[in-house]
Length: 116
Length: 110
Image (cartoon, rainbow over all chains, first blue to last red; front, side, top):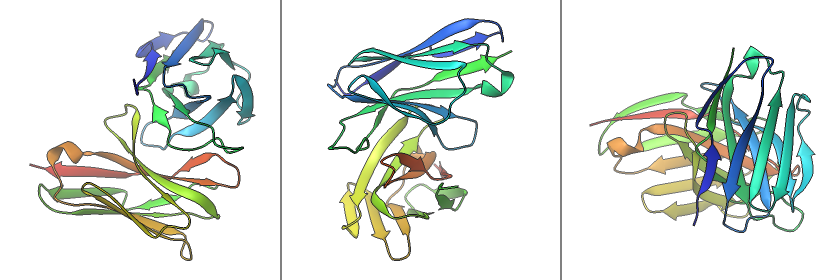
């Protein structure tokens, strides 16, 4: 199984809502990532988990809260978002090598988030 | 910004022609990777070239790396309509993070 799954595919939420994005992989990868991608732009790294511990936070606002409950799952909890947070949110996973977190990354299809 | 630049921003070719995309980056790297993205969906890894390699092939793909010029190119030979997508280079450097380039939008006309 070389697939990373993400749910939901689409999400519309108001600025006062609380929602969560979910990501799952069963490739035995121990590094997992959240990226944000605006239209016609490259993905931007948000968070990196290595062995279920948060290792990189790219100065992401606290209204985004990541969680890694186990080695297969990665969540992104959303609260009090702004319209400018509307984007495609991508999850990825990889084998962490030595102290490096990057190798070939396997991406999920993304969650298209719209904040009203 | 550490972000790499890709050239051209958009490329339109006929089926069967070759497509070449270029990537330039700013800092020293451990490796450079190319990804494809269809219509705002997930990215698919195409090929990885390490800093001590100069050329790599995978099927119809050929990647070159010139670390002295901090640049890479991706050649897709005998293109197909299914190759229509956005293509991103991504570099891994001292920060151990992937930094994506600005992307090239490739349209292959049948």
